[in-house]
Image (cartoon, rainbow, N blue to C red; front, side, top):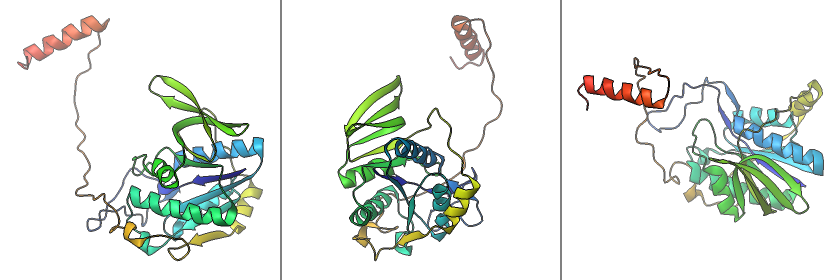
Length: 265
């Protein structure tokens, strides 16, 4: 099987800083990691590879430093890595990013063969939009299932256990397809010393705007319909009152009494 995992290198911090001129993330001097949900996606793909055989490709879009994230993925199951990197792609929003990645995926398929399943994390922790995976599926005209906690190949179909508000739903779809993955019940596999050394020696293939068929009008800041007008850190309010009563009815009565005394009702 040919499996592709889309990953992203994200800041390893909650202290997100924004460039006031471009309204994009400042990554300089901030340690980076593989987006956790993308790691879950890679583990899901690796489990399918363990059962079905095949190859796992990983792809990311970002600056040259994103190679480190790809090397980490090569150490825990991926076979080949591609970095989509070009200054013309800088500042792309989710729509532009998904457009660029889908064009890169088409280029990869022409070279490596069609992908049976494309995996993405459900969302990136630096943006939390959960848009890029589904948008890639739309660009490539693929069926998709989001919020997967488990995915298995049965005959010529993919059976996905999807998390929802009421529990789980089992969904079956034909390949090729796209699956976005949330946190599963199982643990991630760890790299070995041997796999780490092999990953550091592996070639990271770089794709630029010259290597893929793409309309640059839909890339970068100019090609992004989403514009950030303002960013700020919300103030943390202190204080408050905890109501501890024997049951809900008593707690409701106590709350009403407090609101009445405060002349709010």
